[in-house]
Image 1 (cartoon, rainbow, N blue to C red):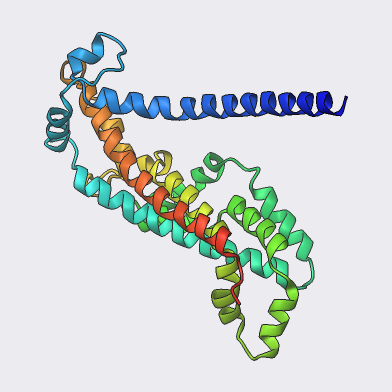
Image 2: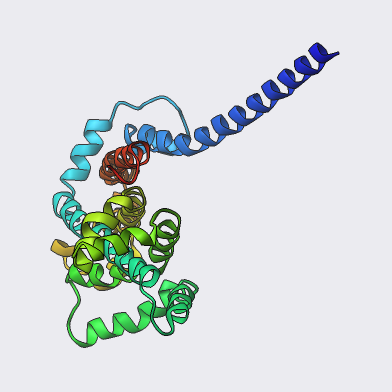
Length: 287
């Protein structure tokens, strides 16, 4: 009887594993399929793309790259540089100041502490487009358009990143460690930069990925603030190619530019994902 029970339990466990792995494989396929489709389309000419979908490369990848690179309406190196400057600065500033704010509201006891926390979370409920209206009017009123730092500074206030950092601190940072560092004579900024930030390394890496990707793909604010060719970012250039005259429209160039726009994001993700794994496996606090 016990053997039959054990055999039945093993069969159920095997079935559950098959179901779980099947779901994971299906989800992975959905995630990778459209990326693969974009790569395939970047190798096909505009005429081939009009014929419909195929999983076979078209052999026009170099041609599409040359056409996109030499397109007179856009400047890909400048767009890549602008996007990288804005995205990298947004990623660094957003994660650092959000972590610093989370540290302040978690470690310090002050009047209306809970109210401040609730107020920051309430801002998460406000759509970005609502606050952008006044910001755009202010930028045009004081001639602050076509400046990359106008895209960087507002990103510092990120309630969703703050909330994630606050939750991570509550789960990983013992307040006794902060008190011990204060007794040893460390300043508050030194405690945060040398003790707290290393503990938060996995959380910082995750939020840097999200912040970088979100800023890199941002089209709404740059399209409203940037109109000079030398200040435009990659999403604006992709939109320019897509809005070209139908007689001159080349979908192969659009897919190639989209592929070129995604590659830096993939590199950043690979680099920071290694930091996440290293931070988790090696432990938050080293002796």
